[in-house]
Image (cartoon, rainbow, N blue to C red; front, side, top):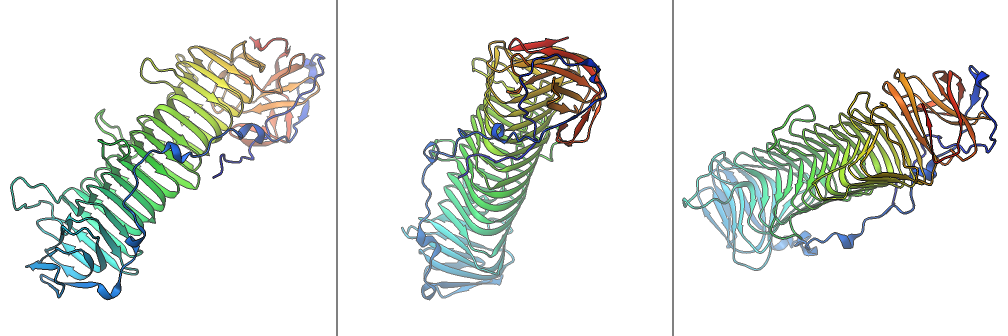
Length: 581
């Protein structure tokens, strides 16, 4: 598996001359040609991690190879005739429009029922296989397909067929104390669904598809509507391939075993998913592991909807850990967090577009990004965790509060470590905020921070040590902080007075070598800059205004020619932090 996303963005790192002569203020109006130098070496990081399956501690599934095989010669036919059922199978009892399968084996079901059910209830230790070959079953009092007792059940969707299951809005139970079945497709035991045919399930009472043990779905085409959850496997939900169109009032995909730390997980290897949910789109009690697939998720009505404190409407949610691999694509519009874990998140790749009414990506514990392309178009806080580590990847985020935020419950150690990757932040609150410390050893970071009081472009409680990478941050002069003087890489900190959005800020050496030209997205009063190109004994000039003919990405220009505006100040680097006022 590739360990990072290879980037070819923004030629912003420029090696500077060691010439220590002063800059001539009379250079205003001159043109400076920018060099075309790549910063790919700062974007990626050879130390970015790959998925370690040994750290994914989950129980094995019930899958065996013979789940996907059956003997045609020994298949029993069950024919549905509107209000009656016919079969010659000795392992089936029929009472009106209800067929009960009492013997393990393979059963092909065809036809329709206007008010009836197929029930599996067997003590046999072998698997029951149900071949749905163009069925349409509605029950007006219960579940149309209920596996009440079986060692294991397999539902097969015949290629080219359309199959429909619709349950009642109110169930009538034989005994007052009964509460099962309670889903349109219900299984009290392990269940597998596979085949390239289609299955449409309308859940009018509770869940649409539910297994009280494990649920595996392979290469199926499933459409679900439900007044509660869509597809639920209590012990685990494993999906490999197929297409899923889910519209539900509750959670879209769910696994909810909270009694065993190795259960309650969701694993998705591939598939196309369109989920509109009133609650969480995908919710796992423990691990949520996504190795592949394309996901379009809308939860809680989307990012414009305000939720009560008791509601949860997240895009991706896990109680233990969210793990995302490359080869995945997510388009998330969530009223709550886009990606959330009560503990850890590890992103190794994938493409994310996230709009959210709360945090774009949120972990209560560790949050590691080792690749991927993450675009957060709308959020309260962009990326939040108790300990954030970014080793690789491409991140662009917009937040109404903090952009990167290391925070959480009192007593934790809050850190942000940036070792690689490209990060662009447009934050109305703090650009980068750590209720602890920040370290930066590599990567490229551009921050368009706050314009008002009460927030800072950089905000940290303990320290900010920088030893590598490219940092360029603009914003308010209130609460102005810069990397520490104990850092090993040089920094510039400048108070500029009030500047309008789009007014270029440009830094060059005495011999005219450009270090950066930036057009901030908002009005600004300060700039923080650090890069290996800022070297001891070298003289520089900082300019405001002017123009550039270069190519602009995220406000940063590369190539082209810079035509000077006004020289704000000149300086020669002699200490780790140089301050211009």
